[in-house]
Image (cartoon, helix red, strand yellow):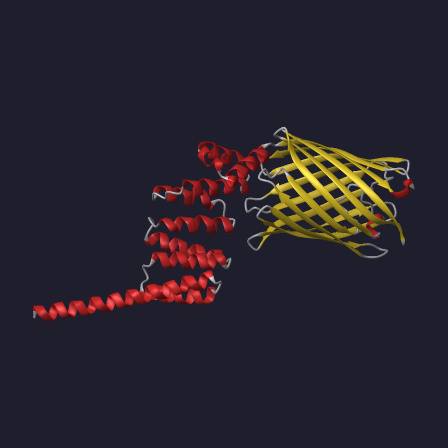
Length: 406
């Protein structure tokens, strides 16, 4: 009898080992599929393993990661929370959990999960610091992010943390004064140069930002002024709203009224998008413009595409602006290239008349930090512009913008 019991036990143990080997080999195939981007096959294999052993918390976290890579964040978080209930001590759980929260822009949850990670002896303090600093930046809680990195200064040797630290300090500055000047001159000295300038003052109150501005223009022996106000509202989900209103004073070079509105929101996991419009009104024309943009960061590069579609009683036109920038470790320092077809209502010299004319422009720009909390931006542009229907000229533009934050 005893011998029979030993044989029977050995038989059951052999079946268990064989089953374990089979599920492990299936799981390895699932990992290979996931690395190859075959997410459907990877999920099928992982679920097969989970059916055989529902307590495999490592497989549950793996499935959560796949759904996160597919941008199905709500499903991914359900699996992560299930894995947490099975084994809250599993360290890789918190790597995935914090990543998914950041990718899904669920910033409020990141500090809470970080507390759970610390409570369960999660050792990667660098990851905790980095993810929380990103969250505080997105939530507009800049001082909390600064304090966090100050408390963990050993991580400032990381380029990412150093860059984020500087961004938080710059964003925490709630006031700024900007002075802008633009000189526009033309081939063969056919006409006198155009001069455009402005001065503005930006200030913040909680999630609100206001920028009153005074614009000045001198063209064709005329002078004009324009009063303008920009307003920005930042929401907790990372979305934001922009509005603008401007009023000409002499109505000689600027439109009598101008207004704008635009809503910014993430697009997929790595793009930003927006949609909105502009309105210009002068004595001769009233013009409605639809616009939006799509942009993406890739490493230290930023790409942006923005069209403007102009509705006018005379005709409709399309303007397109393409931008690319390269950022240094200090994000204030960047170099950029802009290609433009048409005229845009966001330019300070925009009128309802020139929006209907053709324009081809290439512009290079350089922005640098000066004395820690100041910025200096310089640009040079060449335009081949239509100034009267079917008549073109060469235009050269030099722009200087100085901003002081305090």
